[in-house]
Image (cartoon, rainbow, N blue to C red; front, side, top):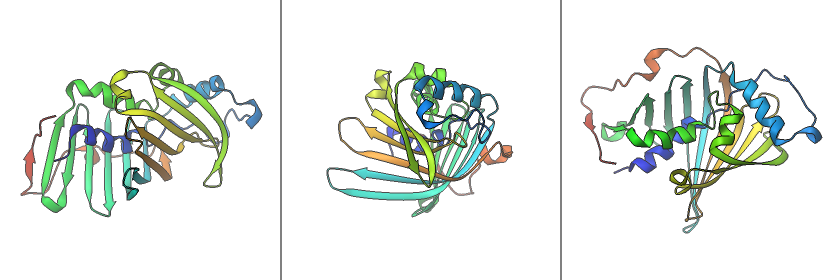
Length: 236
């Protein structure tokens, strides 16, 4: 059975979909002028008009000890009001839905819905969410020790790579650090990489076809499932 920790990791695929995007080209700087403070200020500006996001997603998990790599693909739907949905389509269908303080995992193959009350762990989940969805750069600075690693090229785009080390022990017990590549033209992350504490394992989220502030119907985030599913509430 999936643990709440694993489910929180699954939620990351939604939570990291985007750091709020600015208008393309706004407040442009040359690469040599970028500083960490300038990047955080840009994220502050970008946060002001973020409302929603949709994107295609590829999630790759690497288990170092056994040299194993697994990849799954799908789509994400996010709204600023604590509503998020992941639709995994390959290699096996799965839905991860967050509606406020409740998290659902629906597995069609076994016709089961797992329901989690995030409770005290909501703070842990929100730490991941601080990586996107209109979060201010100043809030990122409060939650992480940030290092600007410089400018790179990814998907034929100029990106800025940030390294984030969680300040909270509760988060750092699970994730030792995060790397995030932000598109300089749109201020949407192209990729994020999470390093799990202790194991050396890591997982990567890669985003394409990102659409910001596209209206998303409320029905997208309703916990409605097909008839005949088994509903359970696993213990954390």
